[in-house]
Image (cartoon, rainbow, N blue to C red):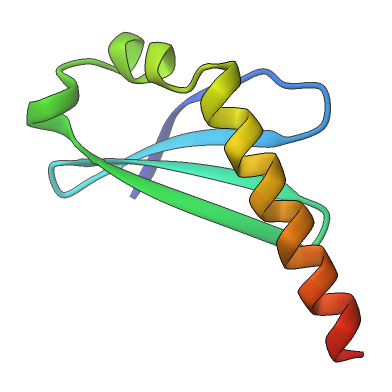
Length: 76
């Protein structure tokens, strides 16, 4: 697996990896991470992939991070 690009964001680290005919988009916030896999044949290019990771997509990721954090805190 190798990193091929990043997407700038003020509060998340967003990295794009390529491995075995897939792009993996990893979102990191504090101690949590989420990874989404996209087939390279469907996406066609990294630029197309970056267009897919729009404000709406990132908003859903942030909501999941909030839910993950609440579950983590409840377990302590």
